[in-house]
Amino acid sequence: MDESIQLFGHDYLDSVGAPVQGLAEIEDACYPEMAEIFRNAVQQLAHTYSDDLRNVFWGFAAGPEGETGFWYPLRIQNLDAYVDSNGYQNQHMDPKTFGAAVTLVAINHFLWFMDSKRQASEPDAMSAEEIADLTNMYHRMRTFALDLCESEQLDSPSFLSFID
Image (cartoon, rainbow, N blue to C red):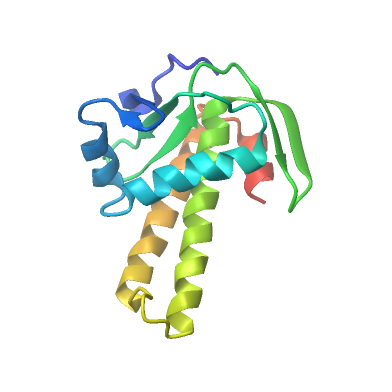
């Protein structure tokens, strides 16, 4: 998939640690009060799934209503991706499919982490309402990614195998 393709016409370029003007507002609209956490989590988690991400720039694809989106590596044709937990490997995964999958996994990991803190009644735990908001963020992102798979803007077999 070419990096110039615009998903729903809403691609925003970003460089590591230096978002373009207005990008932070777009990310915050998609992930209120969580964009910085998710952006950092995606970029860190991505390195556990591929060794092809040195000195990479990142883009952000927002959904059609601006209520969800995902980060993805730029200026990479394909990358070698692997998921140790499920045995998935793909030496030619396109960066947008990779980014959508990693973003969804990052949200899911954060959701499980925060919910376990809530169940353990830790002092810095989120409330049940905040967990519900996170769950809704996860489902919006999942629906967005699956819609992109259905419209063949993301590689469906790669996405589904990655997140399995």
